[in-house]
Length: 248
Image (cartoon, rainbow, N blue to C red; front, side, top):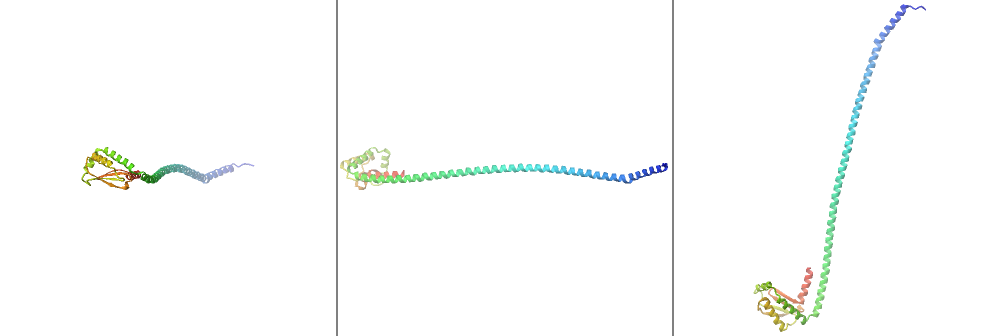
């Protein structure tokens, strides 16, 4: 087969023309499309990276906020627990104070009731004792016992304090002029004389004596000088005993 150089040259020219056409009309547009696609991909990747970074930042921010919320919630719980503990302690202290006050009131009330009961028992016992003593002394009362009581009254007059004597002298003339001497049993003349002498020395006065019988005295005498009374008899002694016991 014989090669034709003209044909070979034409084939080469055709090939070059084809390459030029392909390069000019096909390769460049394809490269442009590829470049645009790569540029779009790079932009998409950049946008995705930006979105990922933003999402990461947002996640970190949310995690930080969540941590802050957890801390605030923990602090709020601790503050509430502290307030509740303080309130509980305050209420417990108040409750204990109220209980102690009520216990004190109950103890005072119980002691008062106990004291009242004891006082009533003592008053009843003293009243019974006074009545028993009165019945006993009524049986023992007589001239002999009265004589001893008169001697006690005379001895008391001999030890009259000066202030009482001055008070009696200052009261002269305000009431009766005589001195009243009450007795349960008749007084012998000797006792009347001694009694008058003792009164005159005690009060520095010779006021007359008026003797009166009083069976309620049981035994002994009662001397009345104006508003002043000297009692040396069983009735007044028993009455004073009962009143003193009631007062105590």
